[in-house]
Structure formats: C-alpha cells, structure tokens
Image 1 (cartoon, one colour):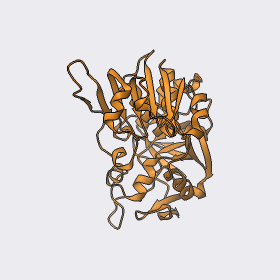
Image 2: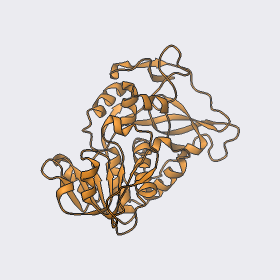
Image 3: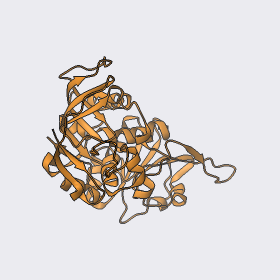
Image 4: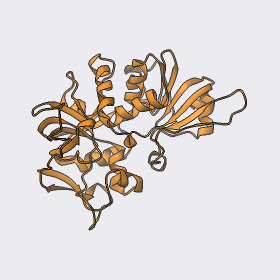
Length: 328
C-alpha cells in the first residue's frame, strides 16, 4: 500500500510517499481501507519533533524506531477485514475513527473500541473531518466544562477545526454561544450558531464586561488572569489548543480551583483528547448530533492524497477556517 512515511523530524518535505506492507489486524482490531483523512495540528507538531506529540504517536523516529511512523489521526473508510474477537463490525461497513497515527495511508488498523459507524448523512470526506477535532470539543464542553442548557459559553478560536465544532456542540447542548475569531471568519461563526461574534482584531473579549459560565479557550491568545474577567463567579475556563508548548502539555482532564477570594470559585482545566481511550463512544454521541442536523463539519480545503505535505504546510500556518481534508 501507499503511505506517507516520516523518517526524520522537520518540514513537510520529510513526509515521503512510500510503498509499505498492508497492516494485519490484531484480534481486537479492524482493518480499514481509508477513503479520506484530515490534517490536524497534532500532525505537524509531531512532524516538527515536539517530544510529547512523538510519545503519543507511538515511539521515536530514527534507526531504532519500533515501527514505521505514519501520521494522520482521522480516518473514514470501509472495513476490509476484522480480527477474531471483533463483534460490532464486518467487512464492507462504513466507519470512521480517531487513531494515534496511521491515517496518511491507504489502510490502517483500528481497535474496535475506537471505531464507530460513519454518520449516514455524511460523505467520507465530511466524516474524516470529525474525529479528533469534534471529540476534543465534546470532551472540553461535556466532560471538562460540564456545559448545561441555558449557560453562556464563549469559544475563543471559534473558526478553527475544534472551534467550529465547539460552537455547534455547545448550541446542541442548549447553550448561548459567543464566538471569538478574526474579521474574515465572523460570518462563518455566526452561520454555525454563535449568537454573538467578537472580532479579536478590534475588541478584547476579556474587557467587554460580559461574563460567561464557560470559556473554551482554543486560541490561547489571552493570559489566564485576563480570561477570568470574562467568567462568572463560578465559571470554568477550559484550555484546549493554543501555542504549541501549551497545546502539548500532558495534563489530561484535571481541574484546579483558582484562588480568587472567599466568594469566588472559578475553575480552570485542560482538555486533552489524545489521552482518552474508547473514543468510539464519543463518536457515537457526535453522530447523534450530526444525524439530527445539529452539527455539520466545516471544511476549508480538500487535497488529493499525493499532496499531503502541502496540506500539512497549509494547516501549520494556522489560518484555516474549519478542517482540511485529504481524499484518497
């Protein structure tokens, strides 16, 4: 099969199209023929050699690497074969999944617990835009932020891959959403459900005087102390994404209480979907929103498989509204 293999760290040129063996599924694994994948910051952080990303992707790169390193965390395609212990899927099923590498290839093995049936109303390309970004948004809102109906939610970085899902998922939970983004994407963010949109080039969301129950901070453009001004007395600040160093902190879902005074109990937390297992359950929950028409992937660009290095380079620039999808 063809795959983009990474033998060293560096620029997108280190991703080389190579012929490798088709992987063989283990007892609890499913072999998926990949129809589409997508590019995430997760990929270029590893490509550049960020240490934590390298560990998440399964080892080091170089002469002593334990396996061939292939990037790509999102896959959508058809089941080609199943391991002897797999009971939920069979050959020909249309599926999607978040994997810890291997998506930039024609085939990938996925553990049964990480796999879910593809939403019926999405194409393979649309489905490939969902897993990592949407699961991140879901965990940040539902599990870490504990979003509730009627709450006021602010999404800082609302036009990116995670942000476009966060706006829609917060609305699906019944929250009132404010999105923060650049001027050219204000229309997009409003169209996907934000009641109010703040252009960060002309207004600082931490100084508007408006307070929110939950701040999902993807852009990481303002310091934590400033973000507290945008929260209610018992509001929660969930940090997801942002500059490379902070995005890669291995902090999981830990909550910590900020010492803001005897009458204030604000919380700050980090959401890290890459530390979760069994994301098939999260994908099933997202499918319910998608098939009900409450959540729709926002796709900025599509690239053919052979142009994966160019797609990664574009995503690394940090200006893509929504997701960048690769078609096979």
